[in-house]
Image 1 (cartoon, rainbow, N blue to C red):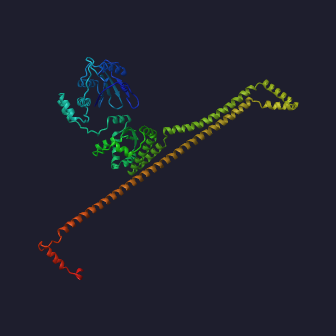
Image 2 (cartoon, rainbow, N blue to C red):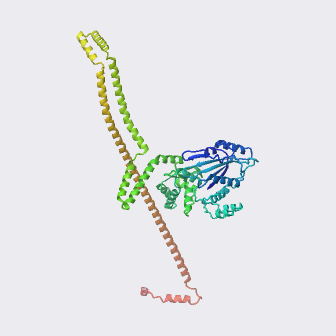
Length: 555
């Protein structure tokens, strides 16, 4: 169970209590059975509670906001008991006005928001919430024991047991003292857990990937950046500045979960017993200029569908290799067929582009058909005008008179008028034109189907070429990364060899100097004695005089 007591002003609390939708609460319930002396609506209830607190001008906060987040769903009786325990601990009057809201989020157990006024309704004195953090921890451990929930790890185990003993709860104190201890800096923070729950990200898997990348780089921050990129992470610049530089933020490309790189590495390495102890200033200097977090997340959202599709195909490749290694040929063939179907499946954006291209072809043919229909309609209208014999006779007379007026003879004028009247629109000609239009429309439909197929072939051909080019670029990037890793490995080996040679030379120099010093000490110990120091010097002189000369030197 988690308890959090926060005296605060109203601010955006009303909006937070009633917020629903994507990434937030699935359902918000006002618990009228637990609310007391306040309106049903959250915003109005907060104003009523704040008005009570503001009567005392020395009170700087409007309300006290208490969050109760149990590990399992609580019955009404259990929730009532929790509220009574909290009121007893913080000396909140039993008849104090309060507003209770229940939030439900998917598979999580419902959690509750309880709001009280900051003053006693009778005396008007301010309520006291000193040391509320450790008192919240004590209440949470006490309620976990009493309600049968497992004890959560805490950094204040001894202090919680002491506080329970001060309240006369010896049995609970003994059980709380045996609870798990949480070492500071190992568990993810509250904001990280909330972000992971909202994005449905697996925090443990992300921690394992970050820790593996840190171990592979061997503490080299430049290599660490390449290892993070190979592990599916991106880096960006945060909003907070440290020593004039933005902190480095880590983005998981799969879930888009964002954390502080320095804090994340320090936390996971400390949990593994190998504390990295990175500093924001050093990390910022090592990575230099980075894209802003907002732009980086927007770019990753655009590339998300393609990256997820590539991830699915990559899993298919690994599955096929494992099946072939185990000798399961039939299963491997089926997996290859499934991979091919998945690779050929269009994304939503590709389907939209294909439909747009096909719609353009259809629109062109439809427009051509509309123009033809307009021509046929005009012909029918003209045929309707000249269908009356009287109109045609009048047209014949007018044409003949016009021809004669222009100087033509009678026979010529009659011939011209007859040809002109015969060429006037008629229903028979309109029917012939409509039949020709219908035949042309049928041919156009055949041509349109062929062009649609051609457009689809061109689309899939271009898509296949783009996918092939993308695969080639990916292979080139992989080869480039492989060459860079090999070059870094060679450089590391060369540095190690140079370092070993330098150490060998230094050791040889030290040994030579030691040998020279030892020889000097020996020579000083066997130096010839002066006269009057016994016959040591005489013995040396005798040995020198007895030394053979000439050929005796060869012996």
